[in-house]
Length: 311
Image 1 (cartoon, helix red, strand yellow):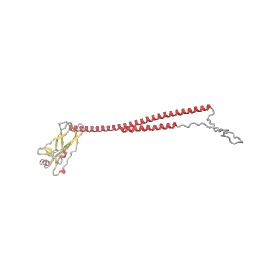
Image 2 (image 1 turned 180 degrees about the vertical axis):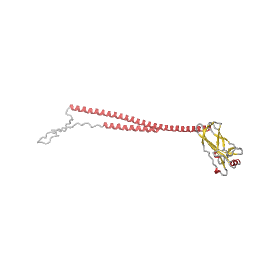
Image 3 (image 1 turned 60 degrees about the horizontal axis):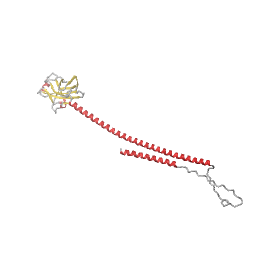
Image 4 (image 1 turned 30 degrees about the vertical axis):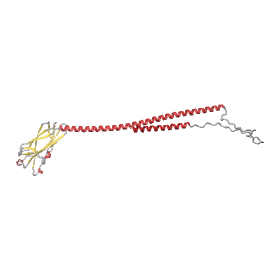
């Protein structure tokens, strides 16, 4: 602000200098007066020429006389002229005084105007600086608000992550396969999370798999809406009955399953939501083991291992 104040001061000084030049010019013009009147000089009257003799004007006999007379014939005219000159001088003096006062007043107006212009410029500079500071403050506040929103979002996600439900398949109850019967099973879905889980959809299928002919494998595990509402509280589990979408197995197929020439598999996916409406899912992949007569988790290198995950 020091450079701006110095510039404003220089501007005011220039305005004052210009006003002084104006006043000086006006006073110079007012002091110029017309030259005073000079008295009229009347030439001497011509003497009548004397006839018959030499010119005697300028001799002792007829001396040359020059008579200077004023331009006024009477004392009244002379007094009137003197009064006019005095009045004229008074008028000139009054006009000079008036012109001086007018110049002084004009100078005062110039100074005031210059001061107002300087003040206005100074106020503009202050307003511009204030706007710049306000803009910076606004940007800082917006940045802080954005940071606060990010932190709040992170904290919310951390809270939901630590207080969310989590559905996990504990085991699948399945009787020994028999021919001329549709395979059925019961899924035990446990909630190992911290809040209630509402199961929305279930997609599951029980199918056979030929290790030597994997391309012949067909199953349908598309999710379908639950026929009734299932809510699993934390630490609890739900028993959900399922059945194969294919028909019954023949006695030959059952024998191959017992000899592990034909694998009996199950894949499925469960979709559920938490209390905030966030949708999650857990899927599973199991293979039937005739030795223990139950479904077990597949190996990590298994063809259907990617189905075994928890959201």
